Length: 398
Figure 1 (cartoon, rainbow, N blue to C red):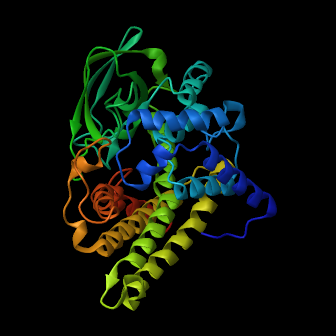
Figure 2 (figure 1 turned 180 degrees about the horizontal axis):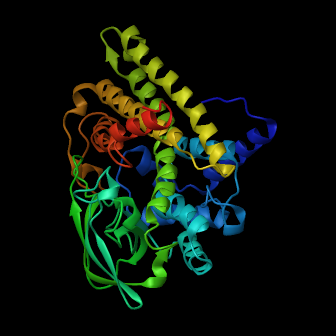
């Protein structure tokens, strides 16, 4: 997506492209482009390459080892890395917990955890949702009871993305039942390798166990792992979610998906013409591209405001809703463009080293996998229905 970049910004874009050409392993970009599943080692390899360059902490200030980039530079980086089929940066430690620790964490927590996030010593996952507390996070029931120098944690988290890879989890836990529900929640950092923590996989529509249940049975967590003040976790949780919802907009992923959609529509026949020359299908592509351009502009404004110290509010909810709908529409159109070859789906064929071969063109099965997997986009990070309520209250005052 072309913006009116300055000469300096164009030079930065050229630097990013040169870096990707030189340092992005072809094995990884081929896996991403082909819709293959990435392993923990794949993500860690790419994180290490970016960290060596100093480009892993994209949203972090320089004093904490980040890039210090402005909103446009972040946009350029995301756009170029997705266009080059680089693995995504796993967001839980870098884009979610990191900003919370920088704003609310103790000096000791910053000194210990922030470098470990960058160098890969810790892989974090998010312990927010529970079976009875999804979009309504204030209903969390996982408890943390103070016992001397420790909290004793009991309960369950669900939909924990990539929790099977993690050694650390940041959790919302209930430390008080007094007053309003939001007033008894705390933000706790938990080592997943200590006794009493159990991870159980959940298999999704695309056949992958990407998300998990995490169970806590009398888990002893040191008091120094409490972030900020006890019973103030709701404030920290909301701060984190505004960053998460902005990131969920996924402008770079949508741009890459749109480019793939156009390529596939240019290959598939529709009678005596290509599908992309069908005026009805072309109109659908044009509409989603217009929506994407408008959202990208709003995303830049929101990121710029966040970089200036403003916590995004209703804007992040708007981006979450629109961004996820755009990506799902691109997925649906891509699957439609692939035609009948998008119907046969062999989940195992997406695993590296599998003996299962694809059915039809190489783009058909990844189109189906993306369609299935991204149905979750409008649910996680706070369902789109709840985000619309937030917008109606904060902007329309309804």
